[in-house]
Structures are given as structure tokens and as C-alpha cells.
Image 1 (cartoon, helix red, strand yellow):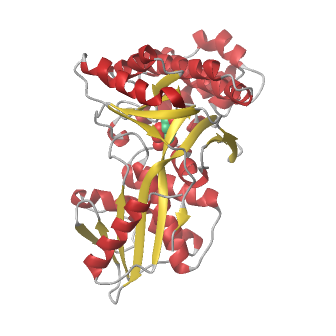
Image 2 (image 1 turned 60 degrees about the vertical axis):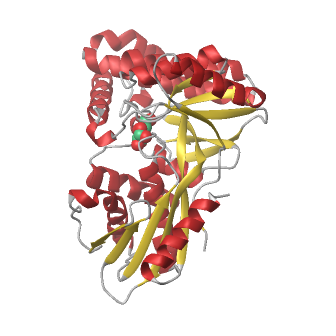
Length: 388
Ligand code: GLA
């Protein structure tokens, strides 16, 4: 299921702007990262889900060459040549994700030109819910459908990632695009970024996730995200010299070897890697816990994850710490920052019957600390789709 309201609205804006109904309409959801923080670019594993908010993308033919692209929320239109690799001027930065995707699709013989496009999303900006990945995936699905071409889903994810790297300056992994593509209704996806495989994990019926947004600014390209990635790569390279097996990424180091060797590493690299190696361990253990219905133990992993985000990876912030502490006090099974960090949202796992009460309690506790978060239930949703 997709967010019908945003689809209806995007179609209406497109028709009004270009005096024409769209020929193609696609939709791709945002995501929450449940566990496995900064593990994706370390060839690790994650738990995540697509959410009930996303981006819709519409295309119709134009009699002019180039691409006209309207941002539905801003009601602004950018024009660009999809065949050139350069980014648009700052004013139209939002168009770069789309231009990037159209550009890299050309490497797969998927060429689009002479079109009018519109996009609109229901994902709050800067909430750490991967609004940009949803836009990239929605763009790719729409362009592929419009041109009648098909490419592998993994390549769609990689094209979105490349647009982030080259057009937005963030050296992200594939988690966001994978979640948007492979999401399943009322389930998590367990992704392995070494094999690039994903496995659906059904959730027990009596639990839900809350998304708690303290509304603090979040822009990964300006955050220390790329520096963290470099620290992890440095730790992996140093560990490779210290063990008798190959360590090409932090995924490869055995947990006990890391514990025994971490003092021999560059101190900052070791500190960052502590969080990532712990996360990889927690995701692996977490699979079994979820299968066994051990939700309290799984929830504790979420709290543990937040703790090493805060102390070792240093990608939390005061507001997220307060929100997570409030979730614990309010009785959530687990809570942690979700996604890149340095702002964005926290995710909490709660029993469905307690969800409303816990949301209210979290808001009340945070208010007493001068924070006004929003807290809402997230419905794990199906991945990207072509609507028409
Ligand atoms: C952002 C990135 C992802 C991933 C997470 C942290 O969402 O885009 O690739 O690294 O941060 O787990």
C-alpha cells in the first residue's frame, strides 16, 4: 500500500502545472532504521522497514527537449539537461537527486528527455527518514516505467546511492535505498550489505514502532558522516594487518578479535569501530531474538545501540538523548536514534496496546525538558511501486 493522499496531490499539481495528466506515476517510501547503525558501508547487516510516508513522482511528455521538474511543495520548477553530469545551482539543489538518477540510468541505456515531471513527498524533511532516497527510488521507478525498460533492483539502489555520493556529497551506504525498494507490509527487512541480499522478517502482531522527532536539523552532507566512514575504513585496514584472515571491512573482524586488538588501533578509529562492530553483533543476535519472540531482549539492543552511538560513535545529540531516555521512562521496549544521526528521529519499539499512552508520556517528559517532539505510530509498509 502506498500513501494515497500524496499520490492524489502530486497528480493534481502535475496536471495543474503542465495542463496534462501524467502518463506515469510512481511511489517510493521512506524508512526507519531499526538496528544496525552505520553498518551498511562496513559490509554489515541491518534491520529496517519502509514506512507509510513517501515520495510520488509523475512524468508526462513535453514538446520541448530537456526536463522540467516541479517540486510540489515549493511549487517551483527547475529545468535541466539530463545528459550532462553537472549538479544544478544551489537554488535548485532539490533537483539534483532527480538529475543524478536520470544521469546514471543512462549508463544502463535508459535515456529520458523531453519530459515534464513533478514530485511531492509526505516525509517530513530532515526527520532522518530518508526522504532523499525515496525521491531517488521513485524517480528511477518512474523513468524505467515511462521508457519501458527494466533493470535489477540492486542497480536501482546503487544509482540512488551514486546520486547521493556525486550530487549531494554524502558517502552513504545502501540502507536507505534498499529499505525503500524491498520494504514489506508489517515486517522488517534484514539486509546483508556484503551479499546484497534482503530477507523479510515478520513482526509479532502485538508490537509497533514509534517515530519520535525532536525536530532538530539534519543534513548528512554537512555532518561528520564522511569522516566517520573514513575512521571505520582505517580501523578495518589496521585490523587486517593484525589478524591472519582478511579484513576488507569491519564486517569481517570477529567480535572477540576486535575486543582483544582494539587498543592497538588508532584511538579514534577504534572508538568509532566499537559502535559498528557492536551493531553488527547485535543485528546477528537480534535475528534469533525476533524469531523467538524475545522482544524485551531485542528492545534492549536498541537501547545498547543508542548508548554506543552517544558515547563511541558520537552521532547523537542532546535532543535525541532526551527523547530516548523519555521513551525508556515511558515504558518502551527499546529506543534509539534512527539513521545517520546528528539530528533526525528516534525509533521506539512498544506493545501496540500501550502505543498511544507511551507517545503521550514521551511528549510530556520531553516538554518538561523544553523539547517539543512529535511522536507517532509508524506502519511498516511495502516498498516502491509504479502506480500507473
Ligand atoms: C544514513 C545513510 C545510510 C546509513 C545510515 C546509518 O541514513 O544514508 O546509508 O549509513 O545513515 O546507518
